[in-house]
Amino acid sequence: MLTDDLRYALDPVAFACEVLNFGTPDPWQIETLRWTEKRLLLNCHRQSGKSTTAAMIAVHRAIYDPGCLILLVSPSLRQSSELFKKVAATLSMVQSRPKLVEDNRLSFTLSTGSRVVSLPSSEATIRGFSGVNLIIEDEASRVEDDLYRAVRPMLAISSGSLILMSTPFGKRGHFFEEWTAGGPDWKRVEVQATQCPRISKKFLDEERRSLGEVWFRQEYLCSFEDTVNQVFGYDLVMSAITNEVKPLFGG
Image 1 (cartoon, one colour):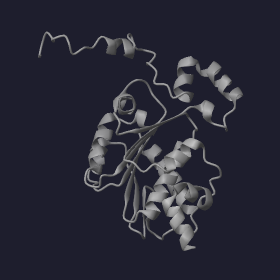
Image 2 (tube, helix red, strand yellow; image 1 turned 180 degrees about the vertical axis):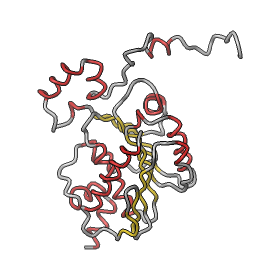
Image 3 (cartoon, helix red, strand yellow; image 1 turned 90 degrees about the vertical axis):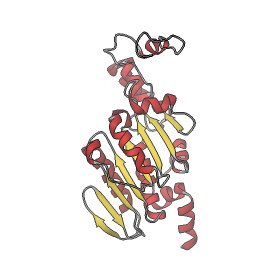
């Protein structure tokens, strides 16, 4: 019915639950699906459902925002291809979906003109896209900073949206920098494993014993940890930096 289609267009949560038969989304997934701003950081534990949530956002945009261009970025082509497969599988669940006019291993285009493209992980080979409406960067803590810098300008003309989603990987890189110092332009969502109703305390206790405290906090508690081979911790280094002392050279 037209009224249902309008409701699905206006409410991605209704679209996920009723069209995609997603079940009951977690509170953070409801918040994320209804996000309408420009910059989103998802700092989520392993197996939280962030890729599934991102795939639902991509499909909803592709169907209800005609002519939009959505790019998927990951640390490797294999990983971005996996995210693309999840987006394609999500699209296949929509019975009244627009017709596919292009469908291959790394991209598809709908009859509405919307396009989803999975990008390679090389900064040198991704340039050329413009007017991008949405960029989804998966495993952002492991994406090279040069690649991140190369995709951001693609949003300039369209004033498009950017989602960085990841589990932390040390106090380094653009994901950490945007999370800690990116300013108010970013909406930040943190999801620890202790908040997930599908992960038992017994499993988490076992993981803590097996992985050790540092890796457990990183993988399951969304904590940005110092790397094990650092001589000086990040906080100690940063506390030694000041703008009040004139440098000996180059100042």
